[in-house]
Amino acid sequence: MRPVIGITPSITPEEDRIQLARGYYEAIQQAGGMPYIMPCGREDLLDEFIMHIDGLLLTGGGDLDPQLYGQMPHPQVGAITPKRDAWEIELTRKALSKAIPILGICRGIQVLAVACGGDLYQDLLSTHPNESVIKHMQQAPRWYPSHSVELTADSLLSHIFGTNCIKVNSFHHQAILSPGKDLVISAVAPDGVTEGVEHSTYPFVVGVQWHPECMIQNSQQILLFEALVKASVKN
Image (cartoon, rainbow, N blue to C red; front, side):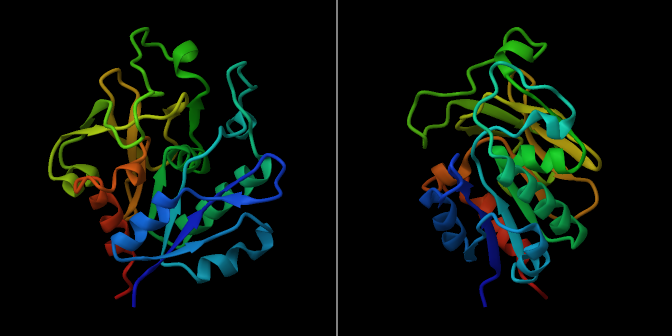
């Protein structure tokens, strides 16, 4: 049987509907997994959700509430969804406690970091110490790779891609400041912005700042989803 991969959708600011870009579930299907959309809901049901999944995909979306990592909101912070924030962070912590394989994408890498006690740059252009920050909110098509990323030698990401340098797309104005407990930085942009993290203990807990689900026509980017699905197969 295909491993079941739980996918977290976005919720609207009014919290009256969920939404999910097609690329996420198509990538899981193409990689050999069974997508299982997990609507944000009651935290007391999280243990039951966890019982139904073999792997977890944390998707992109809006900004996290900076109060979750001990900061007051910067003027450039966008719309937040407190219900989704709380639910996803608790879901991530429960998945980690069960050693469930996790892939976090864009907002998802930030959720992973905050769940592990890390924090974020609330706005790269105005808060990052490198004054030569490159453009991280591209205006090219979503499938187009706009900048390079250096992968740490012998990291899980470098093994997945079979190289130490890849090209990625970019749609974010926030990024990881410190990754949190047991997460190590394994990919960086040319300006030093964190583009990938992985867990130092668990076999497959990975976060990437780019959007590989928009690039699944690229045989290189589908490798991330194949790695998640493979790690989620129960022996």
